[in-house]
Image (cartoon, rainbow, N blue to C red):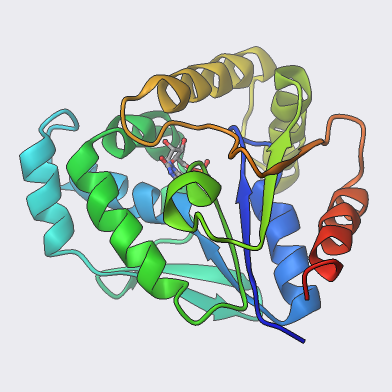
Length: 222
Ligand code: C5P
């Protein structure tokens, strides 16, 4: 079997990481969550009171920041300068600020370079917003996952309730729309379906059905 690269892009809360992890496990590939890298920098910037619209200060901060994605039995751990921030980067505050950090060209340039080096060995499933278009333009399989905003908010709502977090469906809908808007409208590497990506609308599909569709595409290439 050939080791390939699988790029999974799409809007917020479309289920990218859930299916990416399943696909990676089935193939014994590594999974790289690029959103976690932008989230980790956002967490560090807010903890250090760095202005999120100050591109050069953010870029300087990133240069001296180590972000590691560690595969473990309970999924992926995210280490920020060696410290486990897996849960912290999912906070409301980070979620609502990350798109302001991710829109700066200098930040994207450095993140893309780090992501490309992480994926250089292949046998990789990577998810994000610009993987098929910029990070891995030569990925053998490119998937663009979409779902209605109502469905995405509903899934996130149920996930929150299950984790015991308070949640408000209308608020979630607003936040998801807002993040999609910033990610789609930015000048550099906006959220966009690659020309050669396969679009899957997951609105009325189960997680396993989506994973199966992706694995079917993969089997044509390996
Ligand atoms: O995937 P996730 O929702 O965790 O991503 C958080 C944010 O990071 C996105 O809303 C987007 O602003 C940014 N991001 C990005 N490019 C990527 C991955 C994430 O700009 N490849």
